Length: 189
Image (cartoon, rainbow, N blue to C red):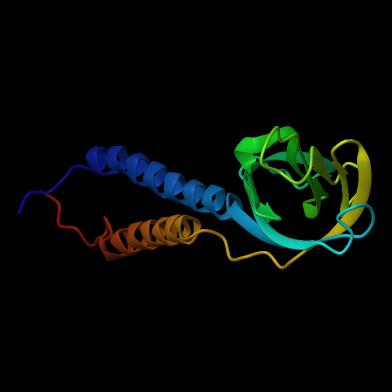
C-alpha cells in the first residue's frame, strides 16, 4: 500500500474543496434560474370585436432576475390565436417583456402590428396597465379588453435536474471525505 506524505494530502484538499464549492454554486445558481410559463385568458370588452375571447401562453427565463425593485425580463415565448390568426413571440413589434415588482410577476407587454390575414391591424397587451388590451380593427375602429393571468406552471425539468445533480455532487464529496482515514490513524513510513 502506498502512503502519501502529509504535504501531498494537504495539497490535494484544496482541489476537493474547489469541487465542492463549484457544485454548491451550481446548485444555488440553477435553483434561481428557471423557465417559467404562464397562461392567460383574454376577453375583448368593447369595440367591433366585443365579446371575443381567446387564451394564450407566455414564458420567460428568471436567470437575470434579482428580486429587487422593478425588473423587465424578455419573453422567451408568447402564443395565442385570435379569430383564426395565430400570433407568436416572433410577431411582436414592440414590448415583449415581463415586468416583475420585487421579484413578483406584475404583467407582460407585447404589441403586434400584423399586415395581413388578421382581424386586427394592431393589438397590444399591458401598455395601458396590468391586464389591459387595446386593439384596432381596420379602418381605425378601436376597442379594448382585459386579460387575466393563470397560475404559473412548474419550472422546466432542467432546473430540477441541475439542482439534484449539484446536491448529489456535494453529498458525494462529503461522503468521500468522511470515508478517508484520518492522518492520526495512518501508519507512518
